[in-house]
Amino acid sequence: MDNQPHPEGHPEPPMAISVAESRPPGQPSGPKSRPLARLLLLLLVLGLGGSLLLNVLLLAAAGLARLGSLDSSRKVQERFFSHEPGGRDKVAILSLEGTILSGEGFIKDQIDRAVDDPDVKAVVLRVDSPGGTITGSDYIYHHLCRLRDESEVPIVVSMGGLAASGGYYVSMACGDDGAVFAEPTTWTGSIGVIIPHYNLSELLGKWGVEEDSIASHPLKQIGSFAKPMTDEERKILQELVDESFTQFKDVIKEGRPAFRKDPEALDALATGQIYSAQQALEHGLIDKIGFLEDAVEKAIELAKLDEKDVEVVRYHREPSLVGVLLGGRAAKGQPDLATLLELSAPRAYYLCTWLPPLAESAKP
Image (cartoon, one colour):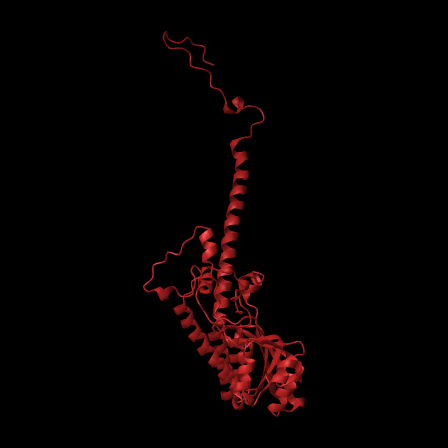
C-alpha cells in the first residue's frame, strides 16, 4: 500500500471492497441461478409446443374425416351376418334407426353402397323408427324405390320395436313385389300428419313477455307460440296437413295393393292409431310376423338365390378418426341456435308423437 501522504484537500480514496467478500453468506451467485430459469423456459416451450401439436393433429383428423366423407363407400362397413362367407351373391341389410330429419346421413350412404355393389341381389330394410319430417321420410322412400327399380332388387322390410308413421311410410318402398315383416312386439301404423303447436301466450303474459314482432303480413307469424292461433291460420295449416295426409295414403296404396281396391279400409285405419304386430297383420298393414332372419330368408326366396352360395351382410357406420380421438363426443353434438330456430317454425311430421323431434337422425 502506498504510504505516501496525500496532498492537502484530497482525502484518501476508500479501500476497494471485493464483491465476493461483500455478498451475504448463503446467497447464490448469479451464474448458479441460471439453470432454474432455463428449466422453466424449457417447460414453457414444451407446453406450448405440445398444445400446438395437439391442435394440429385434431385439425388434420377433422380434415381426413371430411375427405373421407366425400367418398360414400368409406362411410359404410360391410360385415358378415349369415349364410356363406364369400358367396357369389349378396343380400344387404340396411338399417333405419331413430327419428328421421333430413333423410340424408347414414341411411342414404347405405342405399348408395347397395346401388354401387353389383353383387347385391336383394335388400332387407331394418326399420326401428318413430318417423320424422315428411320431407325426410319421402326422401328416403324415393331413394329406396330407385334402388328397387333401377337395380332390380326386391326389398323386404323387417320392423323392429317401432316402425310407425314415417317409419311405416318408408317401409312402403318394398312395393308390390316385396314383403313386410314385423316382430311379435312391434308397434306400427300411426298413419297421419301432425304440425305441433303450443300456445304459451298466457304463460308469457304472466312473465311480462309480450308478442311484439314486426312482420310484413300477419300470416308471416303463423304458428307462433306467443299468441293464440287464428281461424285463418288454422285453416291454412289444416290444408297443408290434409295434402300431406293424402300423399301418405297414396304411398301406402303403392306398397299395399289391397288398399288400392279398398281405399275405405285404409281410411278406417289411417287415424294416427298405433297397432300391434298382430293387429297390423289382421288389418293388412304387414304381410307376416317374423324376425330379421325370416325377412332374410324371404329376400333370398324373392331374388331366387341359392342359399348355399349367398352371403348376407349388414352395413355398419365406419368409425371416423375424429370420433376415435374424441371418444365419440363429436358425433353426439349438442342442440344449437339453428336447432332451436327450426323447432320454432311450423313444420309437418309423419311422427307418432305430439312432440317435435329434439334429436338428430341420426342424423338416419
